[in-house]
Length: 440
Image 1 (cartoon, rainbow, N blue to C red):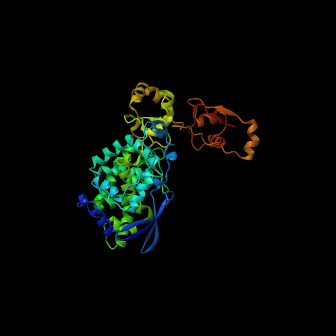
Image 2 (cartoon, rainbow, N blue to C red):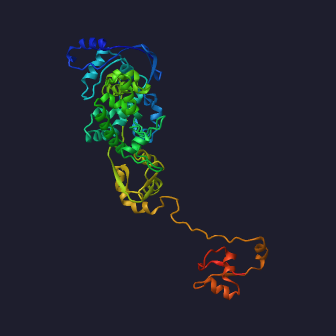
Image 3 (cartoon, helix red, strand yellow):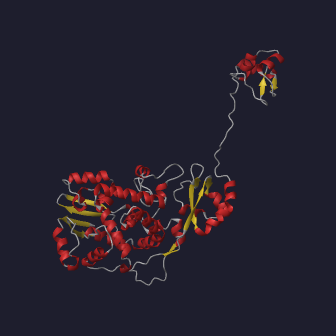
């Protein structure tokens, strides 16, 4: 789609005048945006400005379709279309002023301004991605309480709970093109900086609870740096360094919509997509979108283990479903809970916790790993010469008994201790009971 950008302060003011009751709403837009050509199948928005033609990328999650999202076990098992929903499967159109009014009425701290890039993202969610929105609404029953609890703990705006919608499409195992992982799409260094453990067995970026608390702390820290929520979520997408570069290139502007042309392509579409996600998760009924029926195990609990536990043990001993274990515990990369390293939690449906407790001794008795804990090291093999090999046919051997010494064996077999050591490749006089020594 092609969008024409010029200054939009006048257009915004005109729109606000059409809605007198919105006179108190702040005007934050700094560019007029007009859609010239729209193609719902495009993954980019083409923008024409005074500086030439540029492209804005939709966030990667907005390129997923429902089929890819439903590949998750939890989705396939606990989410299904609502066949009782009688809404017409069509997307009604509304006047621009209706969208401005709805965005203004949402109970948010963060400003939710309107422009045609926002409109394009709304159209994508309510059009091409409307079945995916049905998925978001069903999965939200499981994930949103986790997000809200973490955000509330750090006094963050609760509308940030929709950030994982555009980050990962609510897929806890999502991995981006650049390696960002989990619901909140943490890069490796950022995740570790906020206390998320990543090793061969565990990736806590994929843990819905731990990653949510880490994200809330990261968002809090970004707000302490920028003091503007639009800049915060833009920085969450592309990193604070890129935001600082855009601020410098814009001559010191600290308004997202003023530094907009200087941002990376995907980040230009990121804040509009966030606004659109908030819109569609609140006004889906107005667009005839039916939430999926959810039977997600909203009530789960954890058991803590102090020994290594393989998911296969839980399957074989307790009869748990392997894919269910993976879905509720996506942080365990190899199906191994490393309880021997440190106490580790296993999340289960509440109904299964009692069964685990009853059978935990049998679970622990099963082998969690085929890795050897102790191995025997063979002693050095005697180095033999060609002459030794020729004489080996008439060799004399002695099985060492407790109390035997090399000196004693040398006397017994009328040889020298040095000769016995040489024949057997020994460096010292230590010999072990049961070992065979060549004495001649």
